[in-house]
Each structure stands twice: as structure tokens, then as C-alpha cells.
Image (cartoon, rainbow, N blue to C red; front, top):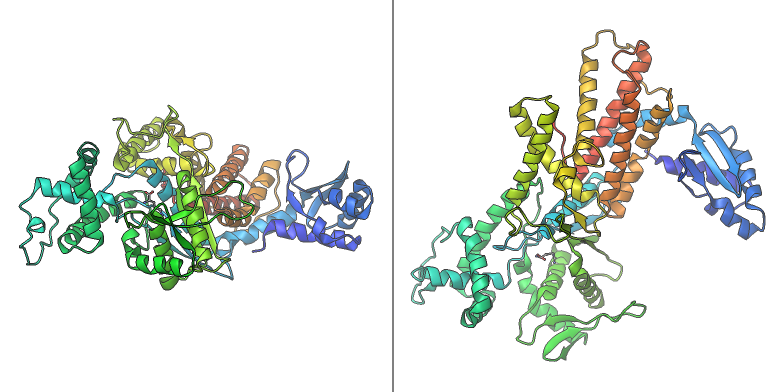
Length: 589
Ligand code: ARG
């Protein structure tokens, strides 16, 4: 369906053009004075300068053309030259009624689908997940779903950190603990065991132990570096251990991400870039882009107009090792070969901002991607505890996802039990869904680039701008719809949404009619918080309407059927929106 804002703008454009003004001035926006009007056009102000007239006169001329239009209930010119608009209730009801009959409630799939890679999650194999990984997973999953909803071909890649020093650390620690393993026997020539020589529990304990040891034990640290190099150079026994580490970690990660309802199409990692590294370095050298600086190989990326001097991108360290940037460049080359994305979207925390500027610029300079390739780094702030420092779990250690999820589910359980509408058993099941909504919405409702405070009590509250409030609204609509099903004397004619009878009802329709536009802006701006803001306003509009409307006992059956269709649409729109946020609603709560 066409966006309502576009339909309104088309009317305004025609009016401006009719009066002999450039229609480019006829820009309509949502009103910032909802007490006065629903939409507004401030274009007369700008047009006044160009046509050397009074803004109010231009506004009045346009208003005269629009009076009597079936789209508007009122069109007013107000000093100094604003045009205030209110929609005709019949027109609005018809638009909203049209939504109710359409697939995806009238939010159409794009005619020009793009192939988009969303690189998110970014867990490091064998290292603990931290809050940044949690945010990356939650926001990235939502971006992926938003893109798909609009009809794009979106590929989610977890891009594991699976090639770094942690591997050497684990190998050496394992050698110290279990020297009898065949991987450490130079004379061993057979097949290595299929079974990993450790469980995920052990692995989780080995890494921090090895990492701590490397800090105080220089000899161990050197060995770990050597082991990492050997692994990267293809040393067979270390490759075999590496394979075990990957298998064991990935199984655990799949489980963790699964609990978050986050899933990836590709489980690739930094190691997959390895085959491209030598070639890309040579290419950068051949093109004269890479040069030696203090033993390292670097590429300048500074451009005219940069607000400050940006440091060059290091592609090879002085000891000959490749780095994070090199592996991201290699990954781009691989993706160009295998996926040919129209748009690259990466999600990491803000600290990696410079890294991605460097990688994108080098990739473009070297022609690994075309000059105009869309490449975005959606960088986010930190999830802090109430003390303002990066969030830690109760024991003060690094975040364990299981603990976080079980803590928030428990808090949700207590909230659900306060209402006493469901049994203990149902509350327990529902608490996982509600807890997940609390966690995700608590994150997504903030503009990604900002830090936010993880406030469990607020997040699980059924009131205010929270996930549970949205779910509660959906559940409430479901229960009204179920009650209506039980009514015998339903309206027999065709169900249609009638013109709003009250301000609250009209407001609900106005909110609903904005839906397809919000879905589109949310995605193009990579801004899930805009969808959260929208569903919060929509839920509020529904609850105000519901407060003063007795749907089930209404005598006018035609009106009753109209309301049922209207709230059914509200439920579908809310569901579609939480769907793209990666949240689901329970049946009851
Ligand atoms: N593993 C990285 C980290 O923990 C995040 C990876 C992000 N993706 C990328 N292509 N660099 O910080």
C-alpha cells in the first residue's frame, strides 16, 4: 500500500503546483503540535523567500485549493505561514480498513531487493561472551529481520573470532595439562581422535587460566604466540586441536544464540579469510597503496575533509603477522566472490569505529569493492550496570548469558505472578518469553549508539516503555477477540472499519496508518529504536481507546464489528513489529 504520508504529500504538491509554486516546497510532516493538527506543511515559509511573497499568503492560496478535498477534514493557514492538516475520518478509516485486508498489513515488499550481509554476533571462539556480543546479537538479529520483512535477501553471518592468540593459549595450556595427548607427540602419524579432548566446561576454564598465566609467565606467553603462528601456518596437530575447539565452542554458541532466538545463515569466521591474506597484501603492494612504516606494512586512508587526521590502516605487523583489519579485508574479498552483497552491515561496539572506517576505505581504494558500495558500521554504546560501569552479573564476573537470561526470566516470573491471571506452571513457561522481551526491548528501545543502563526492575515492568507492556497490550487484544468469538449475535454483514466515533479511536487509526512508513525508515536508517518508539505510541493509543470503549457489550453490532476489525489490525501490526525486533508474545500473561 502507498504510505499515507505520501498520499497526503501528493495532495499538497498538487495544491502548490496549481498555485504556480514548485511542488518541492510541499513537504508534509507529522505534526509537532498534536493538539492543533495531525499533519503539517511548513513549505510556504521557504517558498516565500523564493517567490518574494508573504508566507501566509502562499499558505492561504494552497489552503484554498485543498478546501473540499476528500482527504482532509480541515486545512488551515496559520501565522506566519504554517498549514495545519487534519485527516477526514472517512478517508482515514478507509485507509486503515485497506490495511486490515492486506498481507503484512499493507507493508509491501520492495520491488528492488538487495542482497545484504549482516555481520553480527561476532563471538570469539573459546572466549567468554561479553555484553557487546549480546548487543550485537540482539540489534543485528533485528536488522536482519527488518530487511527480510521488506523483501531483501539478507544473509546473517556470525563472523567468529576463531583465529587469534586465544587459540595458541589454549593449545599450550592443554599441552601442560595433558602432555600425553597424541597432538603433542611428534612421532605420532595416525589419525587424530574424532572426540575433542575437552568439554565446553573445561574449555571455559582453560582459556581464562591460560590467559592469566601468559600475563605472568613470559616463557608461556612466547610458546602461545609460537603455537598460534604454527596453527596459522597449517601445522597438522594444532589444526586438529583447533577443529575440536571450534566444534565444541560452536555447539555451545548455537545453544546460547538459540536461547536468544538469534540464528545465523553462515557460521564463518576470521579463519576463512586466511586464504586471501597473502594475495591481498600483494595486491596492495602492487597498486602502490601499501608501504613500510616502522617495520609494519600500512595503507594511508586519510581523505580531504576528514575532521581529524586518521591514522593509516596497518595490514601487516612488523613480525609478519596479519591482523584484524587484514582479516576483515580478506573476508570482503571472499564475500565479493561468493555473495556479491549490495550492502554490507557490520555490528560492533563504538570502540571499533576507526577500524571499520579504515577497512572500508582500504577496500574501496584497492577496488576490492566498487567505489559506491554501501558499507555501514552500526556501532553501539555499552550496556552499563546501575553503577554506570559495563554490566557485570551478580557474582561480579564476566557476563554469562545463561545467568542473565535466567535472572531476567525470574524477575518476569515474579511480575506475572503479581497479576495472578495464570497458573504457576504457565507463568513459568511464559516468563521466558516475557523475560526475553524485557531484555531485548530494553536494549532495542535505545538509540543504538547510546550507552544505556541495564535496569532489570524497569525492563520487566508491565507499565511504561517496556517489552512486557507491549506484550501485555497484545495479550489484552487477544483476550477481547477471544471473548468476541463467544458472542452469538455478531454483525452479519461485511466487517468494515467505520469512521472513528471518538478522538481516541481516531488517534488509534492515525497511529496504525503510519506503520508501513515506520517499517521502512526503521530499516533504511538501521534504527530499531524507531520501531520501539512507534509500538509504544501505538500501544498507548490502543489502551486509551480501550479504556473508554465497551467493545463486548456494544449494542450497535455494525460498530462492534468495526472495532473488532480495528483492534485485530492493531494486534497484527504490533505482532509484525515485535517480530522484526526478534520478540514474540505469549497467549496469556
Ligand atoms: N570478534 C570481534 C569482537 O569480539 C567482532 C567481529 C565483528 N565483525 C567483523 N567483521 N569484524 O570484537
